[in-house]
Length: 147
Image (cartoon, rainbow, N blue to C red):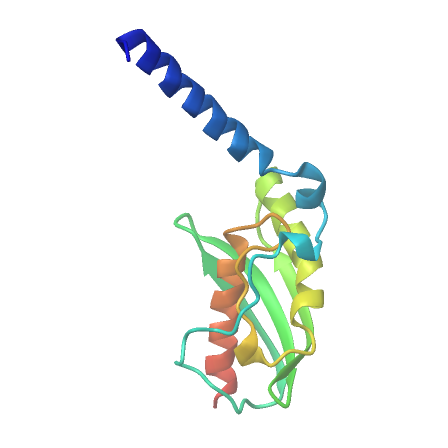
């Protein structure tokens, strides 16, 4: 294969990969908080805090990322189950705020009625980083509710 043929083949592979990645983005599903945007709501892998937890209302800030990003999380626990959840966006940048709002809209359908130890979010409503803040908040709530 000549040097020119190798360059063309490499360029075509690069274009194909770029097109495939671009094709993974669905602006309609990213703008709506649907379950199709959820990668995981699997049980927590962290054995640090396990129920039983004290029933009550808990409000904390969950932190994520390297630039001090956070979200507010308020949860009501009853018999270790999440009975209500409210997520408050803290972002000031328009793009981040829009992502946090979509996340906040999607979360209740994913966690209400579930045991707090069985909740660990991964990717929700087009968000891949905000769930880390939610998971951080859950860990703080579990520590506080443990006594």
